[in-house]
Length: 79
Image (cartoon, rainbow, N blue to C red):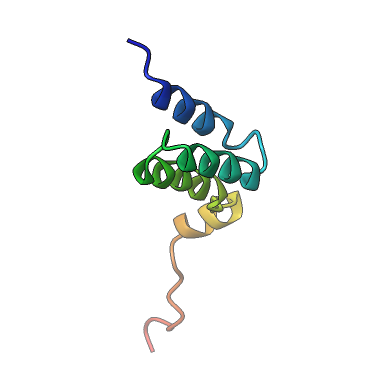
């Protein structure tokens, strides 16, 4: 059987990253006010928006190579 709630939620989740965040939020709250979506659905949509907006920290090649270099011993040996 067709689940209208899941259909709407699936569409909103797929829109994350393709539409502006505020458009998704306004649309989702409209469906919430019509008792189609639940608070849990809104939380899931919000989590996906937050995930999209979380910056990805990538290491540069320079940082990776500096981590793999052996550290030098600054003390002179044999003194």
